[in-house]
Length: 237
Image 1 (cartoon, rainbow, N blue to C red):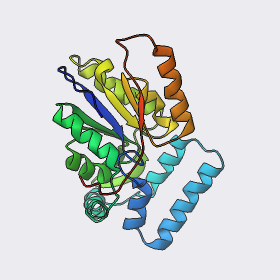
Image 2 (image 1 turned 135 degrees about the vertical axis):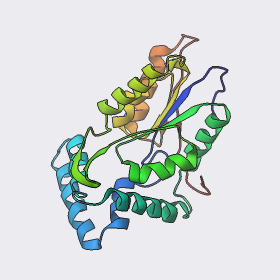
Image 3 (image 1 turned 90 degrees about the horizontal axis):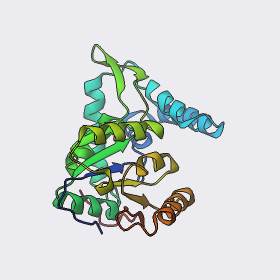
Image 4 (image 1 turned 180 degrees about the horizontal axis):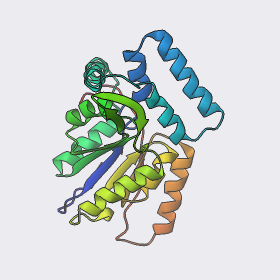
């Protein structure tokens, strides 16, 4: 349950396995590319992860799969992907979606924060009425993807992007803001707001937020952290 406030506030929400039940980048790749291409690309990316390659570099490698692809074609495919997946029960995690709806009714502005890209995220943002999308931005030239990106929206890059947006909203107190995330890479973002929320049961995330609660115990004006279970049944945008 959200805490309503008279003051304006922002709600930052990771997307994959926080708001939706799938990993959008891989799911979209499987939807859009032939099975053989998907198996090859996904296999290469998993191999990189298994070898301990940093997530930021794995993220960069993902977008190389779109080198030369027309931007308009990928964005249209993203809308078809969303229409297909959103029609299926359980695409959205019901508890997170419910919380975001409560925040919107309370007057908050929603911000999606993800390592995924606009082809997947823009339809989701429209469905949940998000005001901002902080995501990985593939570079383009002459209407086609170059295969390169500006900055992967992961870990410290999420933190920096969220901080910039907070700085731009000078009337917003970060102590009034919320952030939702499921993975340790979301922790820098969660630490920027007064109300961090762990989605799911990742032990590192739960332990981090529990330690934060202990540090802030006794300070009545401090924000709080909590956790929600990622239930999906019946979730519709």
